[in-house]
Amino acid sequence: MSLENLKKAMIEEAKNEAKKITSEAEKEAKQNLSEAEKNAKEILQKAREKTAKSIEAERKERASAAQLKAKRIVSEARNRVVEDAMQQVWGEFSESAKGKGYEKLLKNLIMQGEKEFGEKAIVAVNKSDLGAAKRISKNVSAKTAEISGGAIISSKSGEITIDNSLEAIFENSKENVRSMVYRELFGGKGK
Image (cartoon, rainbow, N blue to C red; front, side):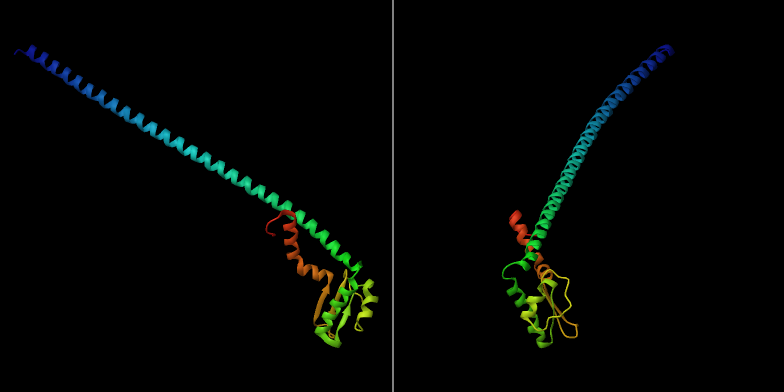
């Protein structure tokens, strides 16, 4: 083989080798591109899923916050209605001091307190109940109490006091009354 033929054979072999390398490189590039596209699709799908979950979580959070706010508003409105009703109940209860049978109630309240202290009790009532209280007990103080009705009975020393005023009676029954009012207005269990 001549030098020229050898040169041609080497060039031909180099061209074939170059084609083979180029072909393999193109094949590998296509494979890499295919994998890159597949990876890109997977990343895109995961991003969509993550975004959808995030949007759903945000929606649920907002819905939950709105429900809580609505419950709070309803609860506050109910509480205002109950408080208004409690004011009415107190008004009617305090007006009982002017009603029929009040003197009998006053007598029971005074006697209950005097029973605890005996002869040494001091009975304080409001100004309008002074006459009736004096008919009931000999222990009535000339000094009147700032109460709507009922009586405040104290030991002679003043150290021990039984508050049988209408205010104290109402205050002691307030939670039960509140529950009853709530049930009457809204049904179900009271607060």
